[in-house]
Length: 251
Image (cartoon, rainbow, N blue to C red; front, top):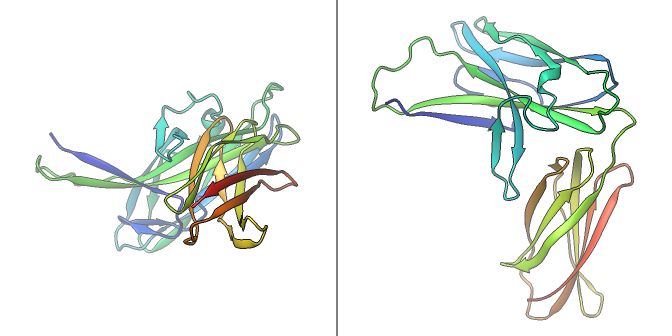
């Protein structure tokens, strides 16, 4: 039996895998109104000397607290927008050419919709000559594009902390998005000694946390001499939405 491994190219741009390249952002964000039709697009490039056929499919996307991604049948997840998206299933990329691939988000006229909804589109080359060796490992590369749509003037941001601790020279914390808007948050950690002297300050890159999901972070800090410390943790979600926490610990 042929073993087929799908490698998902997730959240990186301008990478070359197989025979085509997506030259675009891998996360598309739209502020939408009820009943509206919103156009979206992606730039795809074929650097090879032959035409390439690409298959486009959908999935709903979520993740576990520890960062494992999983994909399920489109339209099944409670906050899926997969059924709103109209797209072409097959693309033919001529050799050495760049094309613009278009799709449409058709937002329902449903006043119960509030906050953010999302799903993903997969882009995968259609192989014209599949391997006949049953013992050969066949690797397929798939680009994964997240499409996030937030209903304008609706939704709330509500973030809570859980299991905040210090170990292995790191601050470890879990964040839960209890609201219904997705957030793109940075985390700032200031570490002080017992005399309230600032020892270290660190700000992470932004991280997405989706509604009703938890995400765990492990943030390394410089080595500290044995003593008592406390950390001020601030998660900045933008739009003046800031959530703080204080942790006392001993190294």
